[in-house]
Image (tube, rainbow, N blue to C red; front, side):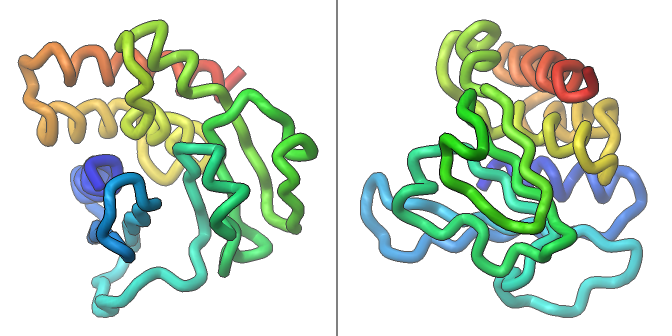
Length: 167
């Protein structure tokens, strides 16, 4: 949920319209959580789930075995996966683009814990150009506290992920 909110704030800071909302589904500890962010140059009037996303970000690659993470993903869309495995190893097929990067490795290296949600937004920014890295950093400050250690570590991880994606 935090990552979708940070992304919505970044889009808003760039003058776009945005909304972020969660879908918790079955309420039990450990259940997969979906979170949506809409970004548009126009007013957003729809208030429903996103059934045909342009982009999907998978923070936990183990979900691929239990959830259809590509459900509704447009053929022209993009799937971004936090994983060191190849798309063949993950068993993902589709006409959409597949981008994968071991964000967990970066998070462990910089944050010291596998907190990947914010750093994954940097991969989204790098691969899609929907938001800029600098704006994403401002949104991180706004949501996590501009002078906080957590915000600083997340910005460092985001910057490293962004640079790796742009190689």
